[in-house]
Image (tube, rainbow, N blue to C red; front, top):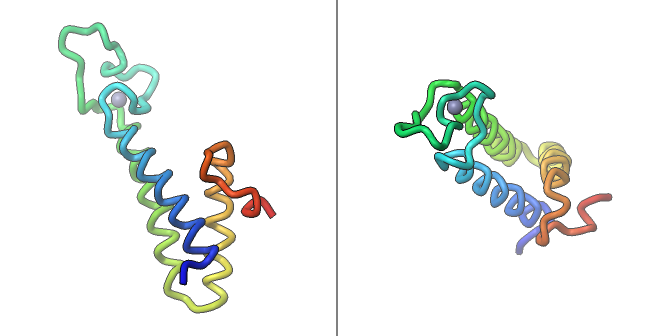
Length: 105
Ligand SMILES: [Zn+2]
């Protein structure tokens, strides 16, 4: 049976996958303001770059994913915590068409 928690976690994991994919894209990734790779007209753009921002963003994505996994192995109380964490993470994407209004409450 697919529970409400399963559904919201699947939603959050899908958004994390999208964010990671964007962050691995040479032109869509976030960078530091002085990063050489953001000068797209450069003849030889530097990518991967050394500003450190793409790696940090990917590490934050991995940490969110790991947090949800960690909370998956602790019985009922951890299940409640997992639900609360997943709701907070899902709320970052409340404008997404797959976001369910019932997750707000
Ligand atoms: Zn950079």
